Image 1 (cartoon, helix red, strand yellow):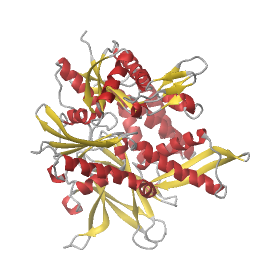
Image 2 (tube, one colour; image 1 turned 90 degrees about the horizontal axis):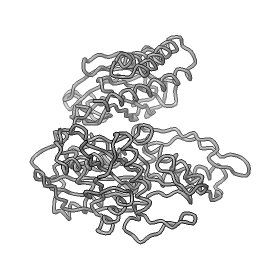
Image 3 (spheres, helix red, strand yellow; image 1 turned 90 degrees about the vertical axis):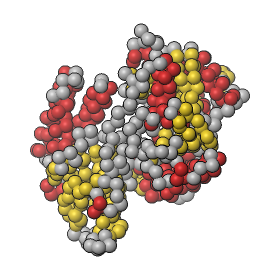
Image 4 (cartoon, rainbow, N blue to C red; image 1 turned 120 degrees about the vertical axis):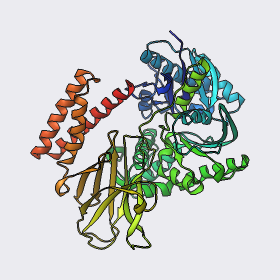
Length: 572
């Protein structure tokens, strides 16, 4: 059996291992079917052992002094980490993460993993690179090459069909990870990929966005006790950070997030709860300075490369924090080029490292095929009017072209006048800012409850692989929700009557579940489980029973569908 050279993205916050399968890179699931492994090590005093990943992350609140995070920031430095009676080097702790990745990957692939390509930030110096190689050796691995992270990302996008490809050989990679930020400009000439300039900030990443939101939440708790200081509690800090991280991630897809956390801490014998709503606007206001810092680095790297923004042929986003809409908006102001975000930003670097491993072993590397939206999807709003017809004509984008599917996105809009009776929802696809230049794919009327002008209405689009778009409209502050389903391929619209979610979810979810239950590529047990939940779900919705039961079955069905689709995709 030919040996495999796996690619590893050894990240500050998360790590990923990938390999080349039939010429295409794939991330390897490590824990519970998930490829992303938290770069966390927690030591167990009772037996002298340690745990890695999510289990370690879950121990952080209870054992903060025994849990190590963000070790990548110390690589190449003469630092010693004290854990109990032990003194450990950053390289040794990193080796635990690398060894865990390799062992779990070997279990999945059915053969040992001995050779790897490991990625590092472009700005890593020689000591940091040698420390990374040493970590691999301590893990029992042969590090056949160290690859710059932006170069790895470019290797992936070299093999993704894109309309952004043009005459310019210059690529800018914007990498905002959990713990660090770096930006690089590459010149690509065939197989030669040269980093022309690179800059970064080792103390700026998604964690810093979480920290600012955590402080905001801490302020909300202080208000409950009249502005008094809270007792220093490491467990409270870790829990608030976890809440902040989950809220930040949710705000990337929707404009408002409700936080309802019970007993996050105790004060004078009584629990303090968090019950509030955070808006995307609030979050972006809190973190605007961090986005500005990244854009300063972008402008700096362009100057060092002696390039103008218009000379960049392709923009590539890497790192989970680039999912924040504020990142996309900031880059769109400076650059006119399309932003490449079709490959999962959490997996992109590891996939590129796997491609490099394949190139080293002489494997043929084919084109990467992705399920992405072919066109942007949005709706007509009053932001501007057609200068001839004087009618509203602005195309407000909700899901952008080349977004990987399945996907769900939501945006908030405002009513125009007091006691507005309703709104005609017109759904378009296309790339123009004018709806008249895009394609109308469906329309329906949404009745509004009486409310003042500028009241918020949230519109959510959910797009699946079959070309079905589920549209959910919710008037905030009212029990007024409506769902419709559009078949983009066949231009059909299925509208739920009276704004009640009783027909469309059955049509949308149950229809998809029915198809999967008949798909013989899935295991019989899986198909039977899907069919069982599907039947129960349809019966409960039609009978009008307790909504909580409907929601519970819907969640179960969605989870089963997602698992089944992942299984089908991994088997292709």
